[in-house]
Amino acid sequence: MSFLNLCFRTSPLSKLATRTAQNLKSVRTYARSHILKVTVCGGAGRVAKLVCLLLKQSPLIDELCVYDVADTVRFAKELAHVDTGCKVSAYTGKEYVKKALQNSKIVVILASSPKTAFLSYSAMFDPNALIMQELIEQFSYFCPKALLAIATNPVNSMVPLASEVLKAHGVYNPNTVFGITTTDVVRANSFAAEVQGLEPECVFVPVIGGHSDNTIIPVLSHAKPCNDFTNAELEKITLGVQSAHRDMIKAKFKESANLSCAFAISRFTLSLVKALRRKSDIIECAYVKSNVHPGTKYLATPLRLGPAGIQKNLGLPELSEYERCLLENAVPLIADDVIKGERYAKGLD
Image (cartoon, rainbow, N blue to C red; front, side, top):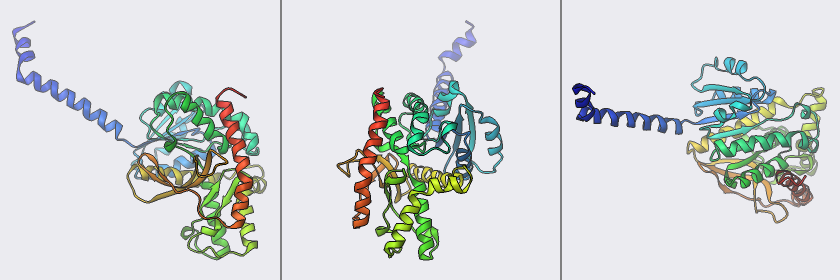
């Protein structure tokens, strides 16, 4: 070793350089951990592409990652042309799932079998269950502290399935796992606004229960700003929301409700983003682990969201006689859906 090298290695300048390098490494690590990254799994699907386009427009998201086993790169390349500050990344194939999930703060799962687009909710379970199980396994390895938003149907069973997989890996947090039911809320708001002659943006109808035909319950008695409906209007709106999935497939000649679903999923995701950004009074309805009704372990109710996920489950509002009847009929159906998801995750089916 030369005298010059020896002097540098033992000099204050050398120590300063070492500290500087360590500090830069620390800064880079801190910067990565504070980037708000949202990953969309199943990003090559029709609804998912629309969701990504809507999320790309948010100034609150630093990075939007598009992941799927099908090609995502070409779509992401075009998405990156949208002139907003949100960075776009894309990964295709199971070998890249680690890169897609690492450092994610929110993971939105829309992945599903292409065979399920026009099936009933219950018939979607078998084709989609394995896809969900595999993704949650990877989630538990690479980003277990992220908020998890599940839009893959049937949501009533997929959320319990995911929860059991997370429990098996010792990383389950009930406050961070959500089943997205916002499509039901969006429809209830629109239908109620139409009946009352109001602007839909001004209307909010809580929706409780589950996310299948006979488990969706719009709580019209707590609609804001007005809850004055005739019995005929109550029934029309309720049945309209419950049957909307089937009705849209018929009306669009076997094409699902891509636009309203994408709008609703992106809205819920952005509410999670706002909560992580510590915005206050973020209220959304979602299907979550719950003890608000003795007949089921999972239920959709209004939630107050915060940086750690569910800040407070606002529970069931006081229901009308009609709504109580709907709920009591729905609870056994939800409980059966929950058991189906749990049994699959435990290898019992």
